[in-house]
Length: 336
Image (cartoon, rainbow, N blue to C red):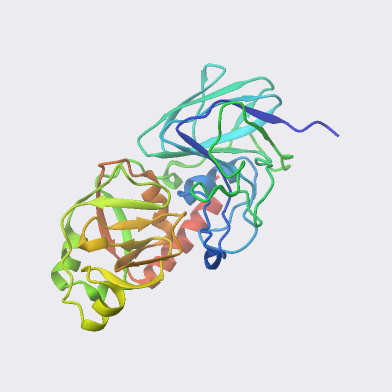
């Protein structure tokens, strides 16, 4: 049997983490699903190199094979054996032994080659898939890194210089040169970005004026955002006068509620200012009114917004959100 290929981390990038489809189902234990913030880009990278299609966000099942999520600046990686890779997501200028590497395309890598991934932009997160996947030990059935909790991936952390990552055996479906059609790729040129939201579960605590402000104002992503939460800067949102029982049981803050579960994508509005949309490392519960919930398809949009980019929120129904998710999965399956 041939020795497994390893990838050595020569330079780590700002925050490069191992991710697969994630581990939904453990919020009751305080463990979020993690996984890629931009599912579309990660999934397309995976299928380009012949890896299984990972399940859509928050869907139970086999999480598929692991790849890398790269934030803002990518890593430098040296391959000690042949491999096939694909880069997707935010735009990157990448080279393989100093030769340009096309993105959204399966690329063959020779033994001893060095891949350099530069700054990400437009976009904020790029993804690297390797045929066979990154074969670290799974935690609770998944190799996804939960950064804040120090779980999964490689020792629960972002990659560091000197790390060596084992690559699993590639499938027979791997085909260098395969690419993704332009129409199926993550759009990075939209300004302002549009994030679709199902109102609720506590939109009734906001006045009509507050709701109108949320859906008509132009927001900016705060630099303090991360995979746990994306904070938006903009106008204050008017809330209704609070009943006595809520003041008694939850506190005197204008957006305080009795603690309840926070869904992935839930948008908390502490004090009626600076809405925070929860990412794939969301906390289990919280005590602030949630004006809406980002649809699963647009969790990936959140992951590509750069600090201070303009953003607008658009209200959709549950039925529209579900159809959008079905449409995206079909587009991903048909793309390569």
